[in-house]
Length: 121
Image 1 (cartoon, rainbow, N blue to C red):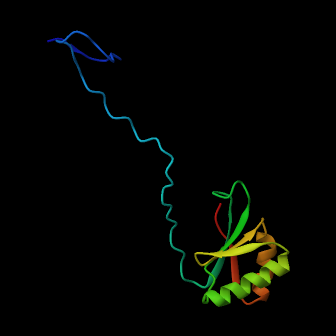
Image 2 (cartoon, helix red, strand yellow):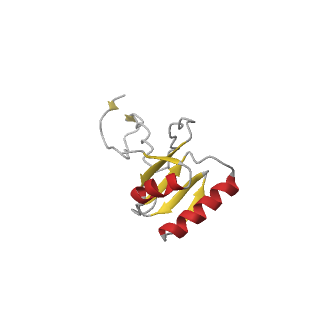
C-alpha cells in the first residue's frame, strides 16, 4: 500500500492509497490573555501610570497605590476630576483619569497629603 506524504490530496478513488492525517491547526484565535501586573510595593507612594492599551487608543492616567477604602478613593477621584476638568472612574481599586495629567497630578497630590511618583515607561 503506497503512503502519500506531503501532499494536499483530498480524495482518491484508489482503494490502496493511504493518506497520512494532517497535524491539527494551531489555535490562532485572539483570546485575551490574562495580564498580570507585578505587585506594587506597599510604601505609601501613589504611582501615576499612563496607559493606552485596551482603550481604543485613548490615553488614561492611572493612579495605583492610593491608600484608603473605596469611599475615600471615590472622594479623592471626585476632587481630582473637578480640579482637572476631566472624566474618570474607579476600577479594581485604581483611579483612572481621562487624558495625560501626570504633571498636574504630581503638583496636586502632594498638596492633598500624598507622596506621588511617575511610574511606567
